[in-house]
Image (cartoon, rainbow, N blue to C red; front, side, top):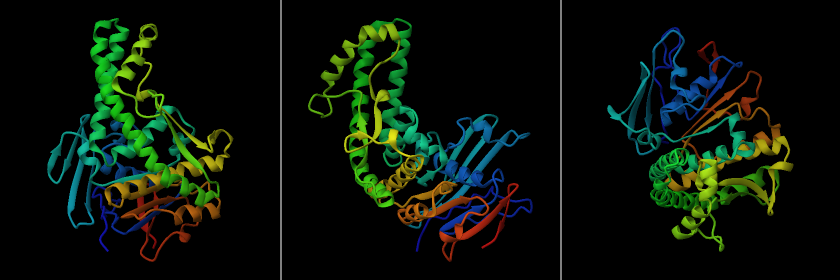
Length: 364
């Protein structure tokens, strides 16, 4: 059966041996701080050109060095093989795919689709509105490159508009208003459509694992129409104009997709405030599973799953249910602490590596 083969050639131990990551399931075990998550981070970096642990690329460089690189090879289900290389040297990042330089990170994103499960996903449930919006935007960006362009344009207009408010250059606002509404309504429409589709997956998964029905994502856009449809351009322009004096005082844009709200409800009532810690953690896990399924449905491509110690806090029954509901994937990479019962989840072909001090030993 064809599946992605990922083999970052820079993963070498002290004997200069390259780790083989071509199995369909690969598990990494070991104590904290030994380098398990570094392997997942490198795979994620190969996929998105950014880290899930830091926004500062220079923090990825080993102490005492001035450069780093992540080079990977992978094969699509169609059989096409691709090589990527990301090099950071002298505070400059260069991305290549199949020997060609990419000048925009978005051109890398759809090449090797990774869905990452990690502890910070809890922010999508109990974190700031910004973090919740990030999850929805990431879900869309994984398959819709045009959405990336639209959000970039919106953020650029928003930044310039806020500068005009702070510098009291009010004559520029009318021009920025039109652009803000144009891009903002496009974002709002895509968020609304995707969340409607996403809820069809998410609610069923959560009920299967917990037995609790009716839990769903509630999208509350900043710009609303009386009939609950997407408002017209003129309706939003009128709303913005009503806020003009308040914005001049606050020196910031007070409405738009950057102020959209995303919550979890059950039967019309907020669910998270009364949910237990375990229920909140399950929401985060199931969000990622739903993201992977959603991606597969939209693109017909199987994602690569990266699971970073996320089963640790679940009881055995919940672990079994969560793993049984994982979508079809091209590959699965998991990290486990020593003593965790990873044997329950492995298959006959699964490769298990013990990670210690940045090196590894193939145990199974």
